[in-house]
Length: 143
Image 1 (cartoon, rainbow, N blue to C red):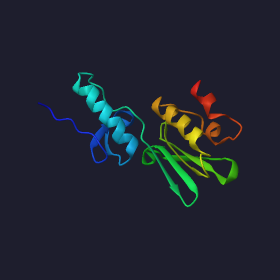
Image 2 (cartoon, rainbow, N blue to C red; image 1 turned 90 degrees about the vertical axis):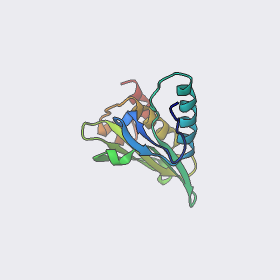
Image 3 (cartoon, rainbow, N blue to C red; image 1 turned 45 degrees about the vertical axis):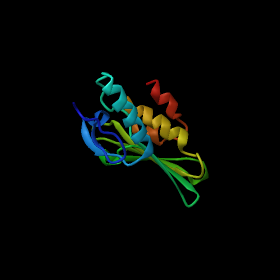
C-alpha cells in the first residue's frame, strides 16, 4: 500500500506555487498535512493547496509571514500604526506571492490573513494599492 507522509520535516509539492517542493517547519503546516493525509487515505485525492503561514514573537514584536517571499521579484512596503509594517512580495507577472509583517502584538495579523487569501486566489493587485494606507486590503479581495 502507498505510504502517507505528513509533518514538519515532510517535503511536498505546493500547488499554489506550481508544484514547487518545499519543507515547511511550522505547526500549522504539520496540522494541515495530517488532515490532508487522512482525507486522501479515505480517497479524497487532494493536493496540498494551503498557503504557508508562520509567526514568531521576538523582543516584544510579532513577525508574521504568509507565502514564500523568495518567489517574489518586487517588494512593496505598507506602513501601519505604531511602527508596524508589511512587505508585499510580487512575482514578475504581478501575482502576490508573499507578505511579511512585523509590529507590536497583533498589529499585522489581519492584513497578513487578507494577504494569505489574495495569495491563494493568485491575485495580481496593483502595487500602489498594496502600498497605500488608505486602501483597505479587504477591498482587493472583491477585485
